[in-house]
Every structure is written in structure tokens, then in C-alpha cells.
Image (cartoon, rainbow, N blue to C red; front, side):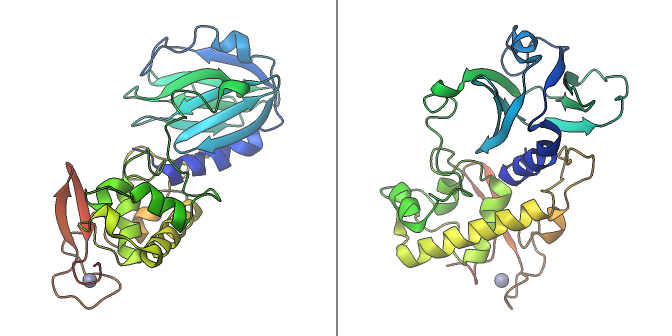
Length: 276
Ligand SMILES: [Zn+2]
């Protein structure tokens, strides 16, 4: 499933083809994904100029001139590709094409159909049900130790599980939670509310650094993710612990290597010596 760095990679790849560009044609080939595609999607967006392409957690926000906003989630397997020449004939999984006046085609492919396309108005965006309960975006200025501490207060579950709660932090998934805890030197099993300001500051810095490095690498391509250009992400070659059970731990001299445990139904990879 794409996490924040993959969505941000997609946003950056699409930005030059969308921002300041007018949509000439929107072709919807399938009326339903995770939820019905708005039946008036093409009518509302054709002829309109994209003012800005933003991101909030794992949602892409297409801001249009005139105040409409298209909220898009890639779901489990969604991919957005850019074609600057006429695209190939659509496959059964290519559900929507967005064509610009400049001749680019942005194609939304989603084999498992957990993706989402929703229209909102800019003025209603902050209160939108999909966004209003969302936690801090870890790349935003508001993501600071004090805010993280406030969010962790009173949580008796393990720290790793708290980091996956989208109401606390938006967009951090299993891969990046494992990697961030490793670089922060914090045990995934530690009680979430046990952090003080120093450890919270270390964790905030580690999360930012891991996400920045992942975005610079074009995200992680384990299954479906590719950059809009078609190039794969390559952060999977830089994992310290994720999916590396038994492999040598990169930053300490522990004997057993990377361990794997189950937490809240997900695999956690960590080093019991380095992470306390
Ligand atoms: Zn180690």
C-alpha cells in the first residue's frame, strides 16, 4: 500500500503536468472504485484549470480554479502515470484518464479498486469527513515534539502501534514506522505514553529524515508503486530493518541481527539492542 513518500513522489511527478494546466477531457471507464466515482466528475472538471496539486496525508488534493477540489486516494494498488504522447489503449484496470490541453494524459490505474475519487469545495475541505479526523502530516511545520507528545499522552499501547494510527500521524505506514523507530533508537514495544521531550524530539527528527530520504529515492516499490514517469522507487534498497529479519543490523554490533515480531496484526522489524 502506498505510504506518504510514495504519494508525495507521485504528487511531485504530476505537478509540472497539472499545475497551471487546463483539463481538456476526463474519461471515466468505471462508475465505482471503493465508492462510486462522482457521476458529474467529467462535467465538473473539463475545461477547468488546476491551480495547485497538494497532498494531505495519503490524499492528493487537486485544487481547481473556481473552488472545486478533487480528493484522490490511491488505495492499495492505485497508480498514476503521465503520458506526454498519446497513451496506449487502456487496459481493464485503467479506470480514469485526465487529458490536459497541453497534450498530457494522466492515467489512473487501480487493479484492486480500493482507490477513491471524491469532489469537494475548497471552503468545505477542512471539515470534510475524510480529512477532519486526520492526524498531523509528518512533513508539515506543525509536526514537532510537543505535538507528538500531546498525541501520545494517555496511550497505553505500544509506540509502534500508535505511530500507525492515522488520527495521530497521517500517512506513516508500517515500513516507515519501523525504519523511523530504528533510527530513533526507540523500541517498538515501549509504551506510547512513556516518551519524554528528548525522545519525542529524536523520533520526530528520525521520521522526517526517513521520509525525506524515501521521497528522494522515489518512494518504495515493493508491489505496485511507480513514479508517474514509470520509473520505480528504490528506497527498498535502503531499508535498515524492514523485511530484513535475521540480516545484520546496520548500525550496531548485535549478534542476532534484525528481529521480527507481530504487533496489532502487522510485522514489526527491529533491533532489541539498539532500540530501547
Ligand atoms: Zn542491532
